[in-house]
Every structure is written in structure tokens, then in C-alpha cells.
Length: 345
Image (cartoon, rainbow, N blue to C red):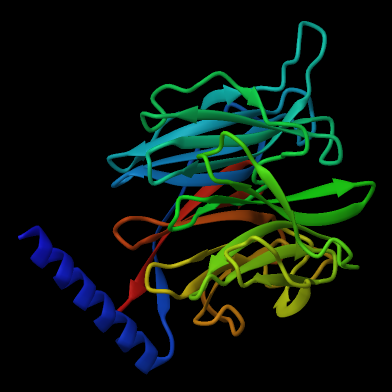
């Protein structure tokens, strides 16, 4: 019976792909939208992340405190079960000792196929001087290991989630901001995060780029999409599962020097959440969702926010087991918004 079900799923998958290829486009619509925090225990928050740990159960984290970069900024974690988000729990701080404390930054949640759940985050005085930290859980976040500092030179995923290849390799999208010089790189682990290897991405590029997202194409091809200072999302490709990368080039997508996130969907299409504006006044007041069959030509499919003022930024996106797309993003720096999208059949 199980074998027959697997065959049926495969046939349905092929049918869906062939149908999408015929119509040439997929579309999504908004199913729900809500603010995660009812009464936030902090004046400001930013840089959210989301993961599905079991069917219908989600964790989301963000950094929160009096203001970004202030020493009281910690990482806060919320759980959604049975349709409700829990009160946020402080899960990491930047306390070094009795007299020394730094801000926390940019949490990233990621669960491997083997069941290991990671919470990556950064601690330090600034993005140019922070270091990577990690906690892990083997029971979907009920209990966590003590915070550990990542090895020197390893920062962990800077904003967006890693991917896990078919062979179990984890690729973590990372970047550095040293003396105003922004560079992206990939951190690779073949042992579930015990050790990491740094893989540069076009280190000689003239583009200032950070915060990559990884897309998966056929034939061992990967693509990264990155935030830049060039009023455009930029990209690079690998044809060997991320072991080396080509040059960084501009896309036709605008970018107001703000974070993005992107995923490859189960049907092989790609989905991007981004601010469709250039740098300037209120560049983060609009937030869109776009889809692409090839990672090159993108079409907007959902408008998440379309205001003249405000900040709706730093999206995180995943596809849940049931096929729905879940997005979290900064809502005017005072809350995190959670939006669920469904595919229009």
C-alpha cells in the first residue's frame, strides 16, 4: 500500500509539473495575515526567521530590545500550535560577563532532515565585529543546548536559512561587512554542523553584497540572490552544488539596500520576497512576492504591503509540508507579521 501511495504521489507530481509548464505561470493568494506578538516585551524588533518543526507547528524568532545595536537586544522565540502564537521567550542574550554585554542580531532557524534544529544568531558591537553563535535542539525546540560560539571565521547564516542537499551537505548563506566592504560567501558542512568550510563567492567583485538566499536548480546548479548597494538584487551561480561559484551579476530586480529571502518550491519553481523599490525615501514601505520558473525572469504575484511610509522588511520565507508558503517580516520595527499564502490552482 505504501509503495502504491508513493507511486501515486510521483504521478501527481509529474502531472502538476506538466500542468505548470503548459500554463507557464503560477500564482499565489494571501490566506491569512497576523502580528505574532500581542504585547511585545520590547519596544522594537527586527530580522525574523521561521521554521516548521512538525506538520502545523512553527517556530519564529527575531531580535528585540530598545533599539537595534543596543546592549539589551536579545533573541526572542515564539511557537505556533493550533493556530495560536505563544508569548515570546527570550532564548539568547549577549551577556559576556558581569560587566560586558553586546547586542544580539539576525537569528536563523533551520531544521535538518535528520531532525536536528539549529538556532543561529550573531553577537557583537556591530555587523563588522560580530561573531556567530548557535544553539541546537533534538526535540523540536522543547530543550536546547547551551549557546556555543562558532569557530573563528565562521559566522553562520547571516540572515537567511541554509539548505540541505540530497547527500546531507548543509550550505549556509553568509556574508561579511568589514570596513564598509560587503562580501558574500557560503559555509559548508558535511557533518550536520560539527565542522564548516568557507567557500568564497567572487571575492574580487566590485559589488557590495550581503545576505544571500540559495535557490536549487536541476543538474547540481545553485543560484544565490543577494542584497546589494547597487539598487538591484544581484546573483551568482554554481554548477557543482556550491563547491565553487561564478561571478556576481545584476538582476533586473530592484533592491533598496534591504534584506530579501527566496526559496525553491516543491514543484521546482522559485519564490522571492523583496522590496520592489530602489534606495531612497521609504524604500522599505512596499513588499512583494514574485515567482520564477528559471530564477531569471520574475513576475510579482502577491503584494504584501503597499504604503507610502513605514518599514516592512527583512522577510523570511519557507514552504510548509502542506504546500502553503509562510512568510514573516518586520512590521514597522514594533512587531513581526506572519502571512500564509496558498497557490491558486
